[in-house]
Length: 423
Ligand SMILES: Cc1cc2nc3c(=O)[nH]c(=O)nc-3n(C[C@H](O)[C@H](O)[C@H](O)COP(=O)(O)OP(=O)(O)OC[C@H]3O[C@@H](n4cnc5c(N)ncnc54)[C@H](O)[C@@H]3O)c2cc1C
Image 1 (cartoon, protein in one colour):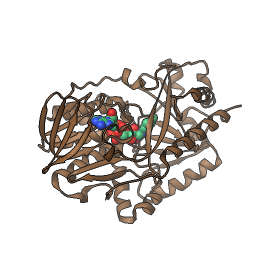
Image 2 (image 1 turned 180 degrees about the vertical axis):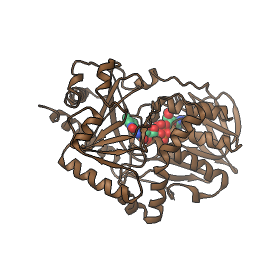
Image 3 (image 1 turned 120 degrees about the vertical axis):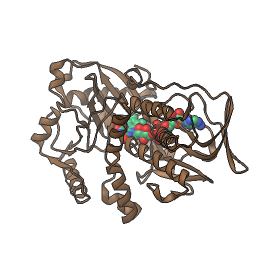
Image 4 (image 1 turned 90 degrees about the vertical axis):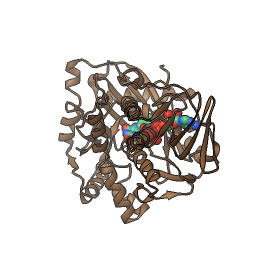
């Protein structure tokens, strides 16, 4: 068993950023806590606007969800558009839907314009129907997305089979706006470009305390401090440090396993156009190829406890079911990450004090949304105009029984994996 906290993405990442711990006392316009997509995107935007910026990361860039995820660059949240409008109201809902529909273009433009070396593949995604009920769910999503102007396409079982190279699905929803990236390389590239634009990036610099002193914020790390006019907290599911500003969410674990790079022949039989995929199962499965042709398959569950063998046994059976041609390919790497889920699956922006915002709760959809939320939080703090924010700011966000619900999700995933994908 490989270390579940060492994602394959760190080994295959070709981007680097020069960073060191903060060892002095400095003053900036904007201090950013957290080196994932949200923090790095905020740092990049603020630096490009001419603000003095520092980003403080507790460990290394991409230590959180940004360095561990599947790499599906989606054009929206988990929720279909009508559910988003029901939660946020028509006008705010429409605005969020439009912003996130544009998010993959924002991500792929940033990658192109800054030469970020992160295996970008903009060939769309396939949401695959694992059952008749799954197909009906896709029909509803298709109708709502088309009514919202999305160029999505509902594929028959035969078309889905041609696109995936698998006969396991009863259809698929194709979204040509979306695509895949090497997730660690994207966040590392964002940090590099932010640094090239003038942001100071400090790693191994956990913010231990955050408080007001006069009209400024004072952030303390083990070996230094920062005075700042404005603060962005972007720590999401990997928050450590100040308890007063800790985001509240339901922690849900998701794991992935990878084969070694596949032979040319095998690779040609699987996802020949390179789409990223996930299925309609309640306890879902994701699968994609990476730039070297590894098959990467994932599901919900925590690899950090004694019973995690249930997940690894399931993933082997599931891969054999979807791609029988891979049954002799060992799964050589496995890792997991923590998702910050909110009950309504909508990310939150909270006001943690004057000129200080925190974003969290991307609920497993953070590549495009994190990039957009980070940029717009920086814009809002630099201009003093909250109307550009993607969701209304709330004073705080509380979840009911988050720890109990974590146990519920992990038990549900383990039981499903114990039972499912048996022939
Ligand atoms: C396994 C998995 C699969 C996923 N798949 C997808 C997917 O395919 N597509 C998609 O869009 N989204 C996906 N997501 C969600 C996505 O990865 C996250 O929403 C996104 O990475 C969140 O980015 P972030 O910058 O807000 O937070 P993070 O990337 O988690 O970064 C937070 C950072 O803050 C740092 N930090 C914490 N406390 C402090 C402190 N006190 N001082 C300094 N630094 C601190 C942490 O070390 C961490 O590096 C997935 C998530 C997981 C876990």
